[in-house]
Image (tube, rainbow, N blue to C red):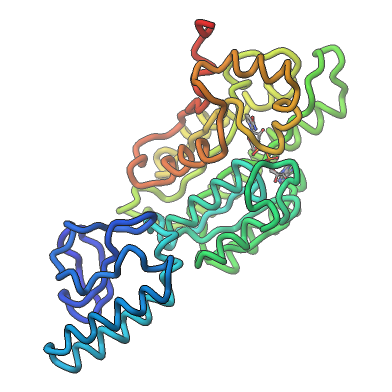
Length: 365
Ligand SMILES: NC(=O)c1ccc[n+]([C@@H]2O[C@H](COP(=O)([O-])OP(=O)(O)OC[C@H]3O[C@@H](n4cnc5c(N)ncnc54)[C@H](O)[C@@H]3O)[C@@H](O)[C@H]2O)c1
């Protein structure tokens, strides 16, 4: 039943090395033609998952063609194909590079957190989606705003739960970690994406309440989440093939790297996340725990809509971004995903600007 794929070294499930099924190259499908020497007829066609009828016809045709083969092999192949068909949606969604990993994402209902949760789920991770509420920010630009992140993941065959958490409320934060441990017995990835931003105002006009809220959410909330995650990671063994005991990816801001007018409290608290990343990473490098950070530029999300709809602010932001467009949540999600993959196991304590070049210097025009 269990075999090793000689091309990839992965454990595969099948009747014999000749009869396991490998999806061919197609959108979202793992492996590809050329990475297996299986005969064509044993491979699921690329249209599988999109059109169930076509998939069934393919199976029927090839069952008949293969009738020359021994009956038991054919029945087994049919059974296995049917089993796989039940999981086709899962297959179309997953590359499985994070299969079995448990990932907790804050701010997962909207924008970058949502895009991140979806991309981790596509890689086979089990998601604990934490946010103030399950519903997406109604100002967001997501096409499927009406559906929650958990709905989108589970509808596509992934595995996710929602956990209501305000990261500034430490009881709720602790409850989220307890629930994660209870339900899944481990945690492998924490993405600290939830954050608080307030409309532009001069430094002198910022009040104590604003500072207290910024500090409590952006600095203390991110710190509390990280400390609890690290404590959980320390109870787990290093996953040798992944290279780590656990990963944390923080989300700060371009405003943490250079100064922007009108957001001192935001910039200062986001800068604290950059440095929490570096100093936390030094403390836990020997524990094989990676802590990295993404500093996004201007990204079209519900949080940014107020700026994107202001002609003057929009012009300033476009002018300050050398790249020819502003960001979308997936630009950030893909960078976060990289920090969660085995390939990035030797990277820690880094703050990566994903900002279309906004923090490089003064653009030409
Ligand atoms: N959009 C940008 O241009 C931009 C630029 C730089 C940095 N950021 C940062 O990116 C992160 C994601 O923001 P976004 O643009 O995707 O916004 P968004 O509004 O689309 O999503 C933010 C999500 O975080 C949740 N959230 C807010 N406060 C929370 C709290 N205390 N506890 C738990 N969840 C909370 C919200 O409910 C929301 O679902 C934030 O940390 C933000 O500061 C955004």
